[in-house]
Image (cartoon, rainbow, N blue to C red; front, side, top):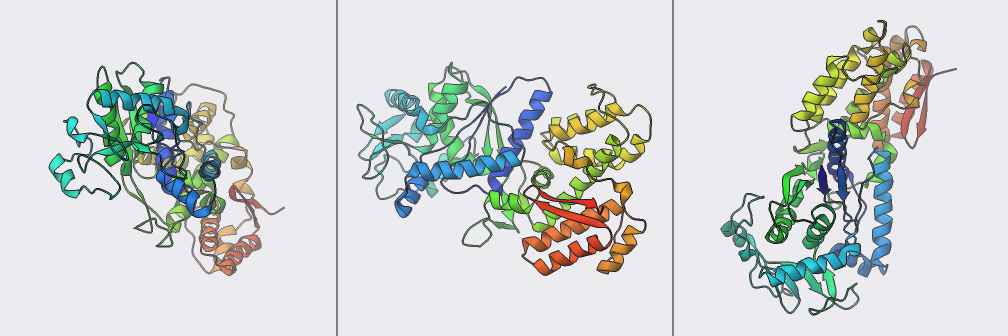
Length: 461
């Protein structure tokens, strides 16, 4: 199974919206491997673009320094979120010869032309243009604009090669002239070189929904005229956008937070669970309350794992013992419905304590851990550090008296809820409330420990 995902353009620090798209493809890849496919996964790095050049010009830094710093920050965050490394991670600047070869072929075939400021793709030469985005040419032409420095035959035409400007990085390109590649041709050339050298297409091409037009539409237009047998990809998969408090994330609105900063405030596994609680294709809304809810759900999974591991060992690798494996597979078969798969796992968790009391449940523990790992939320040693049975008698009553608040469910659920409330307080920098909640738990025999991975709790003593 050959998969190409449009990766990060690291002209700025990554945010949670980026993570949502890449995290879905991580789960898709894990599931295909679970089903027996050998996956070749390519995710590129757009390490040269207008924004990184503009940032370099404004700050006086080298564009490569900007790209490298932002990308290192992004990769560190992806590792915390449990993402698998890519099989291939091409950088656009490493594929300039392949990009130039593709441009030559497009010019020779009449699909591209040189002008005063660069080489452009001739959109009118490709009859299927607009099909992916479900738009017609008349609609697109009505909204097309031409910048003052562009020399195009048609407003819809787009740049394949931008001729060199003073103080900008450039590469020689005979016989046309030195310059740098346009954004869209980079992905077409890298996908062709790594996944489709014979021109018969590959399996899955993906990215965020904001890439459908013009980026992916332009990739199709560039690639398919040069193929032996189109289409470029058998499936186009696009992740939904992420809103922050029902608004598009923007620095001007004050709701932009770099991903690495968010991960410093919240448990990465809780963030991953939060992102998987909604279908990949739908718009999702981020709130601190939603993250707190995800942390509580994660706590339920941890309690179930502790209940199982306290009574059994993962002695089997047979994934056919219970109906939960088949149900999770059925959930994911239905257009990768991770929300349904998580609901199934939480149902599994709800009955885990009763299952653990039965004999011969080693397979169940293995299945539970395996399915969580399939979603990228594998149990770790910290999951079994807390013994729920060690909570003091009357713990819930103690906590209710300390906080003057009712708590439903098990004592462990009450602990997780207070931990989530404290995370909310810390997020809004209400340190007094954070301390109040910590002290209430401590008064009832529970000690909190904050680390870069999140907050864990244990019974005092």
